[in-house]
Image (cartoon, rainbow, N blue to C red; front, side):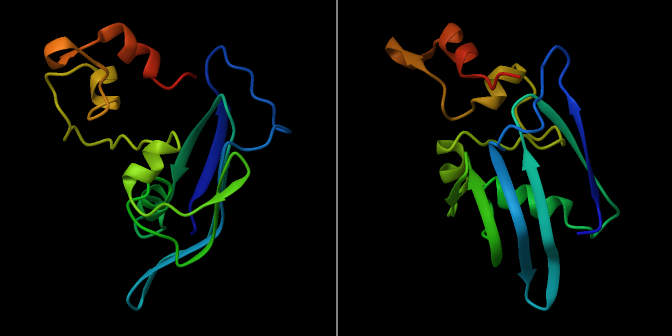
Amino acid sequence: MSGTTETRGAPGATTDPSAPPILALEDATKSYGAVRALRAGTISLRAGEVRALVGENGAGKSTMVKLLGGVTRLDDGEMLVDGQPVDFHSPTDAVAAGIAVIYQEPTLFPDLSVPENVVMGRHPLRRLRRIRPRSMRRMEPSG
């Protein structure tokens, strides 16, 4: 991958660069037939960080996000969650590990709030399958 990442702390958050990453991708490789979409892709994400994944078209940005979100699987390399190796077979596996991808295109549900879109499909429900808003807000990623 020829893109770059930039790390900045979230407003009001303290980021400890010596803290172990909560999510890491190390020397990731992904090919689609003869096209190598990602070569030696590496990123480490720590609590409280805000990241930008930047690069030209074809640099592997989308492929890296798809790997992290369980949409596609690694050909080679390693993914770690809280220091433990993982192999996501689907986005459901990633969500179970606490990872969700929210794509920039407004293809979700424009009539729902951001928290409702983030927890889509995992809404806490009360009687008659009505959404429990307070419980849903507690499910939002902190940071």
